[in-house]
Length: 330
Length: 301
Image (cartoon, rainbow over all chains, first blue to last red; front, side, top):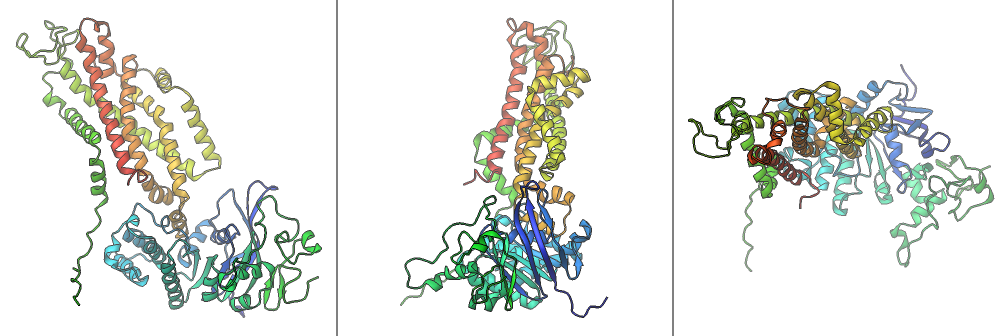
């Protein structure tokens, strides 16, 4: 099998995740398309409930009934994830994709020691003797820069701080040398000082190991620093996707613009931070047209009537009829 | 300028092992320690009943019926806790009754716990789907019936006897274990480590028994300890109604029943088995409470 251009590591096309009865279902994520190349850092930003985590879980096949996942294409390294059996999918994902979660306090199994959990993961994918696995577990703890790793090996999760738990989780994630790491708000629950360390560590490991990294966050500053491409999500939709530099220099979607305008750094000297009036529409009061239309400062008649698709705007894509800094779309 | 005293480069003490931590927390509760000590005594009695009881439990001394507790020998025999209407030594019967009661507790709780955990895991993992509805509605029906009535009904179907009584008690306790397990499972399933485990390739069976179940152990241990006492109580009730252990088995409930008509004239034949039941149940409850305090992190300070 030879293709002219190697496929992206992760391809997601028109992914929709629904909860609730058919007909009256809530779309937690709708019509999401993106791809991640090998070794690339992609940021997904959006406020709480915008569908960031649900998108990641759907890609990994972790959405349970009654949730429903539909996608035109969902592929990892060219292999279609939807058509393969549950078993195949598990063995593929377990080794090649890893994920770390937001809350470090619940992301380790409280019943077992750090060593046990690390060795279990290592054993699942590599095997090896007990002592070899233990040595590897210790090496992993060193890789994630845990102080006094020998002692931490036999600690239980409740004896670790949040930052240490997060590092252990990261160690478990990289234990089987994944090609893609999905980090779901990896720094949200940590102190600001620890956040910076954690982020630096994440990036170092990403570079050293050539992993692709999908960074889910609501911290635009983090994304600006580390991501090559950014997806901005609003109410379950991707509203803009662009190269990170472009996004911050020339936002095309009004929501992105408002998000950037609300950053404290861009509000220096003002008494109040800029903000959009109104709130994100709930499950059952979504407008017929553009989901941002009730809050958008540039709203026109067409925005209220028909929901816009993603348009190409230069090198970026934006879900807006009237993208900022570009001509109106038909 | 004085230099600060050098800080000794000692490692902080290793955190205590989980078992030691449990014992430390358990020991704080004096009632629980007393309960545990009594339990130890009861287990000793049960294990060595043949050695420590003065007579055989069904040995009849025809010339010494309904003797009150006393240390004076009667016909060369001492009956410390008196004799019953057919001249059997009450102390010996109580000691052998301990064995029965503990076995009843062990078997019924064991049965109930294993099936309850299994059903609870299934109900928790298949939440919102058919298995959960079937299991939980069945448990609701069982909970709607008064527990003793249900036990009596089961024994009525199966026929009286100790084995059937234990089975009936296991059935009566089943819904409690199922609901408790399901609740704990649902709580654990919401946590990220379960997702992480699934992502690492764990199947449903592995998730159930290796990942989630160990974290549900604390409430189950507590419930099992408390279940012991209710099993013993129910077994005594069934024995008293003539549906459990059959005479001459020295079961405390049936001892009560067979001596009921002498309650006015011979207090010891009724009071002592009653006391034995009370003390045993109390010991289990105290221990269970202590375990709950020690195991439940929400109550820890």
